[in-house]
Length: 331
Image (cartoon, rainbow, N blue to C red; front, side, top):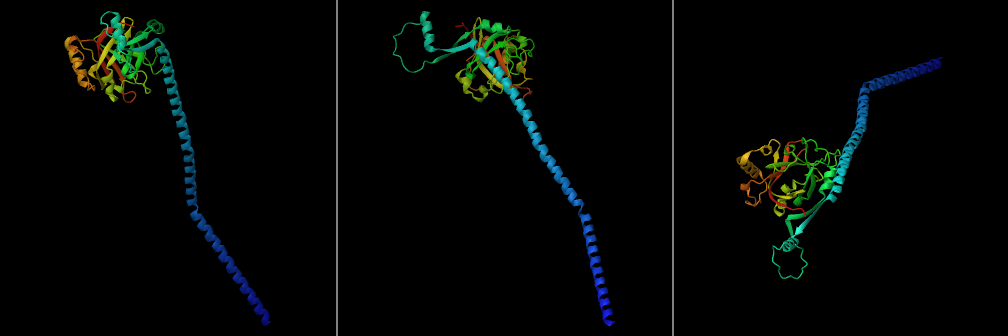
């Protein structure tokens, strides 16, 4: 009996111990469950942050790709516009051929005219003949250029910077702003006369306009006078080639200005002319201009070449001005 009771007591103790263990495990699970609930919000925030970063990482490449497409399209458009304009004006070059006249050719011409005495022939040398830069020879098909465009007035040639283009008359200074010599729509436009000139170069001051193209075409090379002062020193001439002869002008001034400048204003009479020349000479960046090279007391006609400068759409302009010196015959 005693042993049976002892056995029952031991069983009761085992049950009690087992119950205590179960209670402890249940409490531990409850505690673990509670701890998990407390930490739930933190993983949720991290998950949201990861999703947001993932979206951003997807959007950035997409934006960059779209930007590349847009800018690539703009670049391609500009390239095609430049090429179309360059191809057109390159084709016109067959109607505008310039051949500078050497001093020897000039002397031989004078001999033929009997104005120079015969001299003993000198042995030929390998040294190249100097060029008479004041009298280049031109072979220009004026009739063909006039047939291509009835607004054709002259060919402008600026040898120091390699500018050679037909010039057209403009009705309103907008007509040829984005229209080529052949009448095609293109932002390169044409070299055109100020509408106020009425197609004539007989005014005391005649404006000629052209775009400052990034590839240096049209009047894009005018600014080279400012970058390299030796250009005007070595060849200071601008030529206007017309059916009645070659009009040579000498550069006396170039500078940066704005559209609000008084250089765009008209002037009247000799006193107005004199003040205008004084103003444009004062503004000039042409420091090596030989004073007295042009006799302004005779008040020769002026031409003013004007082009944009600085940011697109701004009011800054670059100006090159020249005075008439001589009219000589077409070759």
